[in-house]
Image 1 (tube, helix red, strand yellow):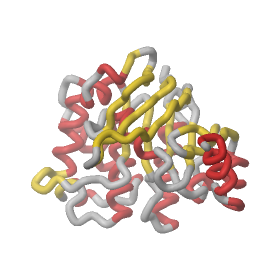
Image 2: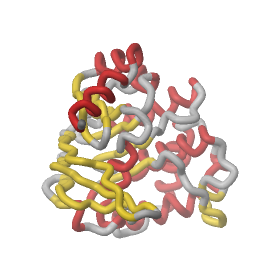
Image 3: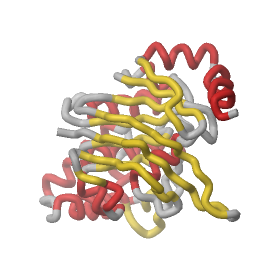
Length: 256
C-alpha cells in the first residue's frame, strides 16, 4: 500500500524579513497507482509543497499533516521520511564532489534497507538502471552531479528512483532542461515505477509536454499556495492552450 495524504497543509518559508506564508491550506490524496501532476505559475507554491513534505529546514509546517500510509511525516526527520518510503527528485540536484555515484547509491540503499546490498547483484542492478537511463557504466565512477549536464542530472535522479523503489515519488520539475530524447528516457523511467501498481507519483511541472509521455490520473492547478482547480489530463491540455490567467484572476478576486 502507498497512500500519501496532505491535509490542510500550511507552510511558511524563511526570508530575510522573517517567515512568509506560502502554502495556505493544501489538501491532496495520492493512492496506489495514481500519478498526480501539479501545474501552476512561478511562485505558486509547487516546489514549496515538495520540499516541505521532504523536510527541508527552510520550510516550516505551521499547521496540517502529511501522512504516508497513516504515518505522520511531519513528526519525522528527513532520513526517517526516506525510510518510511518517500523520495524526492530535486529540481536542482546538488553536486557532491569526491563521492562517486556508485558509493552514493550503495550508501543510500544500505540506509533505507538497514543492510548493505549484495555486491554481485547490486553491481548488476546499478548497471541495468544506468543502462535504462542511457548512461554508460563509467558514469558510476563519476562524482555525484559534478560536471553533469542537465540531462545527466535528471536521468541520474530517475536511476535512483529505479534502484531505491520508494512508496511515493515526488518529482520536482524533472522535465526541466531536457531535450526531447532525454525527456522520453526519463518519462519511461517514471512509467516503469508507477506501473508497478502499488506506488504513487506527485509530478510537479510547468509544461504539459512531459504529460504526453507520462499519463496523469489527476491534474491540479496551483495558484497562491492553494489548489485552484482539479481534473484529468484534459485540464493540462486546457492550460497549455489558455494558460493560468483565469485562475490567477479568480484567486486575486477571492483574496480582495
